[in-house]
Length: 355
Image 1 (tube, rainbow, N blue to C red):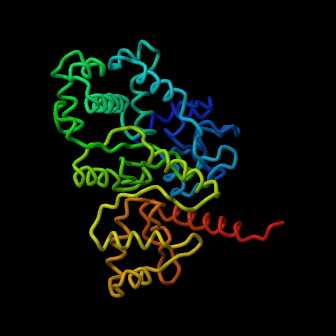
Image 2: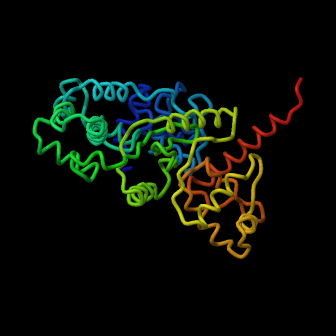
């Protein structure tokens, strides 16, 4: 419960249908076995019948099923109003927004931190700092003078600008033209939020944000590339967002976004084979090993499967045990089952004869 607000706060938010708590917690009702969003329009239960969870995954693992009215597994069309307001403040403000500035605007700083952490994986100040540094890098690489970027980014002192710049990017501003940057975007899906990381070459990472070990994957990516990761958007991130929408809507189960694969030659071979498994089909680990040209390397292909950093796009969820049972999915077995069922339904509809 350390990740959650106080119980009385959450219950009040549930009774008030407070949209600012969307994504902060989910409420499980013991008497019905259903879990809901904070904004669910259903009649509110007694406080002693409610159990709270930081994620929909935790609620599912506790045995609750999703509510049919508020549909807690479906993506939010828009983030809470408070987050939209804060993001607008960051884009419009010429200087850094402090906790005091937030209080003067009627926003509790702790609420801002909690909301950003739950929805974007970083605090309000961390997002703000990374956003400013990303803009500063763009200006410096575009030929702007360092002093101009310093002032445009809201730093009153050169030393503060240089320290913040080096903390994010690892080099001082005068060397900005020598470094590359990875841009990260948060994408909501019906199975939970995903983190996408890409640059001009293609998509480097796509994972569910609640996957165990995601922080290690991000750190490994930074170490392997030597590049910083900052919030942003580019053509490949926009493309994967659109393709994920089409996938979950059942319109198209293929992905065409360019990929950047980080691994050994054998791992890359396995990942490329995974991309050839057609929707509605599954392979065993033994078949994957045979297709890779190493029939006895079942354990090795399983290891490569587990190190895939591009969920859904590199289709590791389509690999199952020889006896047909599900296993070994970093996003959770419940997601693997959902994805396979979803793809079978999509394929089944495509094979139905026209009326």
